Each structure stands twice: as structure tokens, then as C-alpha cells.
Image (tube, rainbow, N blue to C red):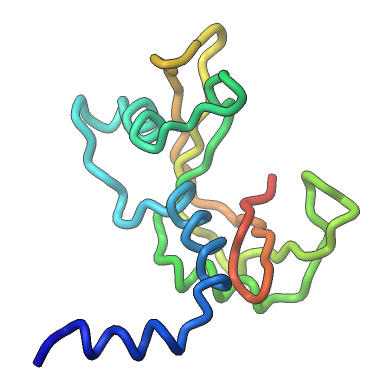
Length: 142
């Protein structure tokens, strides 16, 4: 059986506009399982940030967090009671995680410049807060 004929009806049933923001969130923040990178774990942020071309307005993105969990787990956090977002307090579409998740925070080193942005990393297990729209995560808050 041709796979195209199976997938086509499924794609027509899906409202892809709902999934697009979640896919963007996933690309920027989900790395599960945690990628093995050339140069070892100490180079994780340099490699991952370069791989995703995390440059904003001609500058190295200052901070990014990679979550080492399945996107489905993060989507479930969108079902928790809404709270104010930390980055934009007037927004009330953020949701706290129900449990700790494994994350890697990447911080740009002072003076780093594109295209060779350098980062220091910090691995931890902690709660997170996500901004959600239509039941899917679109923003990692705080």
C-alpha cells in the first residue's frame, strides 16, 4: 500500500496551524534524548546553538534552554491552571510544569559575536513555565 494514500487523509484532517507554533517551540527548545555533540558534553551549547542558528538581530542569542523531555509531556503542562508569564506579566497564558524536567541552559559568553557564538552551559532538573496557545506550547517563559 502506498504510504502517501495513508498520510494524505490524515494531514487533511489535521489543522496544521495549531501544530506550527508547537513545532517552532520544539525546534528551539526540545532536545530529547539529549544530543551527543562533537567535542563532548562541554561543547553542547556551542554546537546546538550553532546548529539552530540562534542569532537574533545580528547578535548571539543570550540565553536558550533545551528541554530533554518529549514534546507530549510539555504539551500536558498546557493543561495546568494558567498563571501570569514572568517575561510579560500582562500575559496570562503561561502554565507551570507539574514536575521537574531535565534541562540545559545555554548562556552566551561575554563579548561573543556571530557567526562564532560561544556559550557556557548549565545542566539541571527543575520546573519550567511555558506559554501556550490553543493547548500547545509556543514560548518558554523565564
